[in-house]
Amino acid sequence: MFIDERLLDCVRYGSSFGLEYKTNITTMRSGVESRNAEWKYPKGRYSIDYNAVTPDEYIAIRDAWVVANGAHRAFRFKDWSDFIVKDQFIGFGSGETQEIQLFKRYSFGNYYKDRLIYLPILETLEIKADDAIIPFAFLDKGKIEINVASGKEIKASFEFDVPVRFVEDKIMSDPLVTRGNDRFIMNTGADLVEVIL
Image (tube, rainbow, N blue to C red; front, side):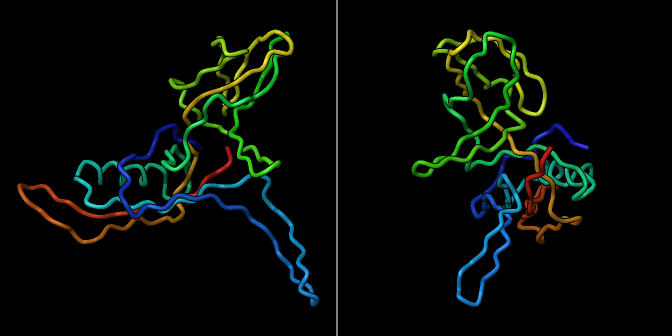
């Protein structure tokens, strides 16, 4: 089950954002390595600090964990280190109605890797054909439906969230940082991992 809500955005300094693959590496007697990539696409992994949060912020984090059933259910998360796609080529028009999966392209030299995007922020999604904004229908899991003249270059711009779950079935908070006027300030955190929808 997926909860179509975003976890609280108020991450603090000390949080870490990253991507990971899973690779099996066997080293031969000669020192030569045999490497086998088990995952086709990378997964995000995050360690989020919520330092000095207000009561309302802490309650929002705690409630998300309770409703998500700990590590059981996935939800939206904004990766502040990587959440924008700008004027990226996504295909050519076919002259007929076609479906296109949104993705983000990463390049290194003459090589590239596409990361599938399942959760674009619809209010930010803009599709262009030969630099003119065109209408589209959003389907599901990052797919759009368009009808563009054959051969026209299609580009997309958007922000996106990442589908994640809590890594652990427990949530902990540090002792109170301060308290006054029936209000408290405390520290908590969450480890998250991307899931495939």
